[in-house]
Amino acid sequence: MVSLSLNMFWIVWVIVHRPAPTIFTDDWLSLHKLPLVSKDALPDPNTPQHSGNVVATSLYTDEFATAIATLGHSLNRVNTTSRRLMLYIPEQVTPRGLCIATATGFEPKPVQRIAPPNDGRDVYKHFVDQYTKLRLWELDQEGASQVVYLDADTLVMRNFDELFALPYNLGAVPDVYTNRKGFALQFNAGVLFLRPSTAVFRTILEKMPTAHYWHHEAEQALLNTFFAKDVVRLPYAYNANLAIKARSPRMWEGIKDEIRVIHYTMAKPFTGDNWRYVPMDELEENARRRGRRESGRFAEEMEMWAQAWRETYATYRQKLKSCMMLSNEPGLQKQ
Image 1 (cartoon, helix red, strand yellow):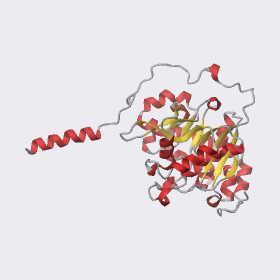
Image 2 (cartoon, rainbow, N blue to C red; image 1 turned 60 degrees about the vertical axis):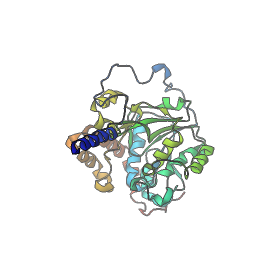
Image 3 (tube, rainbow, N blue to C red; image 1 turned 90 degrees about the vertical axis):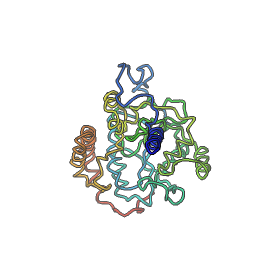
Image 4 (cartoon, one colour; image 1 turned 135 degrees about the vertical axis):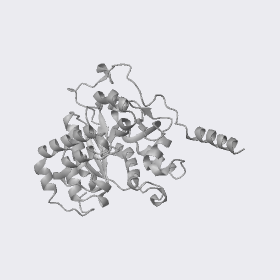
């Protein structure tokens, strides 16, 4: 009887905990060498881009200021001509942080923070400000007709202007987890293509209190619920989440030469332990030190960021140094 009960328990456990279904396995193999984007579909680099094209990012605390400066420089390297906007929360960002973040080309746009439901009790601590990202949909008021959003912890490797020609309201890359979820159907909100609409923004806020979603993942879970039937899947190369490399090194190798944007999800090259601020003159070594962890799994990607920061500092040294003369008290910058 005991043996039968144990067998039944084991069968039930296996059914409940079996890996989530996926369209491919972790030992994925490349079956072709086709280019990611047809050359005939790429925009002419000599043709002025549509004035409504915007690349946006967001700054909620100073800890990500140097990351955004580096992101801005990486955009300069790939010759994107789109307007750049950085959403920031004035009460939480210092004049110094704002100066650093905008030193390489982002135009600051102050926005009012959107508080998480239930005073943030159900949200992971590092996601408590993320609902403010929803204000991207208000950028139609700034003349934006299509927006590519990049989290501060991203680095642009290749031009992605082809995204601006998408006819859809939202495009995003499927998320990847190192646990049993694996390669998920839900999308990661660290890189988004969207068509801003204040009317849509108001609808999202209106539906937020009654929508059924996992509050721990904040705006990402809400957007996955709101756009579940509408979002178009973008290739992994547009949001090369480090979790892809951790989950399937072969998949990472398969997309490596086509990567448009690296997303530093599992390791931040610009923060220390416990999200500690890292001074500008220590950022290169900090990135390399973090790259040596976990047997050097992300050493190459950390070196890419370190080199990008090195170029950023060399190019904008005087401007960045002058930023350090400004106040480090939040809320004092002119709006």
